[in-house]
Length: 294
Image (cartoon, rainbow, N blue to C red):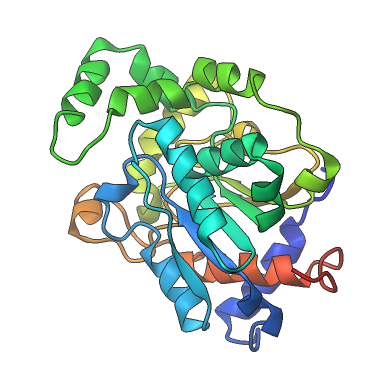
């Protein structure tokens, strides 16, 4: 694939894991790093927390864009734009899953001043073309009813709306209304997508395994459990493919009690903080950007 940075990512990741990567480049401090949570992310305490902690440990300016993790897509896009314009530094946006969709969609609709303020976009396992799991939920009345009931909980948004938004049909409609990405836009975008084999009985994929099987059975596509590989790619952007990584491994490092009850276990090959630090180093080390001023 064009601009496939998978091997470079794995090389840097190995150095980070072994403590051999050295200090981050000084230019890393020139940016503000804004993270955007995915679907239901506001209700999972450990979601993206270690990623931000790693950046802060490295002396970097990092925080969340405070969005509604369910529903309110127009409001969320406006919040991303406001956060970018409020920054006194160029911004690197990092969105996971639905958060990656929101980052992607906001940028494509952004005004020139907002785009100019955005240095890079990192899309982690974002179902840009839709998720077969969302299609599965919409196809079963009992699951639709459960989604509706979740939306009645205090501090939750419209869960059904988000599932429709993340469905294949919903994303097709959204993407059809989007302006095309120009080469300069694609050069800013870094994409991580992943897959694991649901038939391997590893303990760290237990809560994602059944979703992965649903995608495999319905569409014959490899996936990370919620996002199929082909749905997450952006042709012409900087794409990174990782094997043996599930949908939570990039954002949940040490699961809390709720996620552990659901079956979440640490993946020994990947730690969320290591992944995020590797992305940072890759972006700054890429020869196409190494000497570019922010």
